[in-house]
Each structure stands twice: as C-alpha cells, then as structure tokens.
Image (cartoon, rainbow, N blue to C red; front, side, top):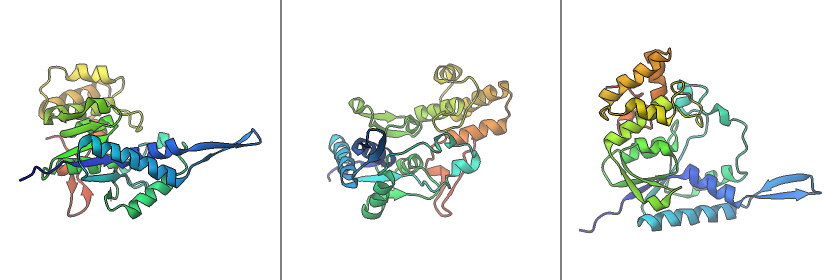
Length: 255
C-alpha cells in the first residue's frame, strides 16, 4: 500500500496578506494625491504561486487553507478585550477582504471556524492524530503545537519535528512572555531570555513548569487568576481544547 501524503494545514491569513501586499501598487495623481490599487486577478495569481511553492516543496497536494474568523467574535477577545486592539485602524492591503471572500466562496479546500483564529484551526487538526499533518505558517506561536511544522519564512530549515515536551515548553514560555503583537502583556519584565532562564532545568511537563510560571506572576504582584488568563491567551488550541459537539472552546486548565 502506498504511503498517504501528509495533509498540509496552511495559514491562509498569511498567504492572502502577502499576496495582496505584493500585488498592491501606489498610484499618484498631480504629485500629491496617492492611492493604493490592486487587481484581484494579480492578488489571486500571487496567492496561487505561493500555494504551489508550498505543495511542491512539501510534496503533497492535500491541504486545508485555514482562515481566521474576523467578525470580532474571537474567543480571546471575550476573555481579554484588549486583545489585538493595537491593530485597530491600521491599514490593510486594499484587496485583502475581496481575496478572502473569493477564496472562501470558491475554494472547497478552505476552512473557517466561528470564533477561532487560523492558528487554532490548525492546532486542532494537527493534534487529532488520524492523519500525518504539517502546519505551514510564519507564526512562532505554532511551535506550541506538537507535530510537524514548516516555517514559511525560513523554508531552508525544512520540516521541523516538535515534540510534545518542546510544545508544552514553548506554551509556558509564551504564557510568561505574553505577545506585544497580539496585545496581551504576559508577566512584567519577562522576555525570551528571562522566560527561558526561569524554565531552565525544569522538566518539560505542565505539572512541573506551571508552578514556576505561577510563582513569577505572584512575585510580580499578580495572582493565579491573572496568570491563568495570560496562559489561556497564549494557548493555541489542540483537539482536547475544543468541544466538537457544542462547537465551543474548552478553556485551558493546568492539570
């Protein structure tokens, strides 16, 4: 029996943004009035070029294009209203909305789950365990998902295998560091080096690492409730974090 090729779980938010940004042009009139302009045809061609690069590089034509729910009903925002508020008002490529709508309507290989981001959709699918998968993204947060990861920003690194222990370690790192890009602060004065030092030598299990994370927050003047909130913000969902019957997120609890 021939070996089944891996299913690629592709961060389509990233692909669409890059395609539209690359196809966008600035048109100026009378030297002082300039406007962004983009052909949807050009953006779609760029998107397909990037998609072909991924499938050819990884040797698989089986994939899901995973999109985020951008209706404002993201479950993290309900936990922490400031989530990604720092991005409000920032301009996006002019064709992005139209390319998303076109792909979600026309492409049968797209996935969008209400209240979830593309990262969560990929994390859930990657941990279901019924088929070999490869997550394709530029987002470092996906290193908190055990399995195979292809960094689209560094294709020369190839496919990386992330163990369950390394995935949990990165998750606890993120719980300490927070993410300025996504607008949740984490523990004060904790960056990558400080978080790595705090967890250095600690067995890479949640049972052993969580007390270290909790102690850091308590030392900074925050209680367990706030530490748990930051961990839930950092948690990229896995299969066990989602109720498929109710279509609801099961908020992470330290076990």
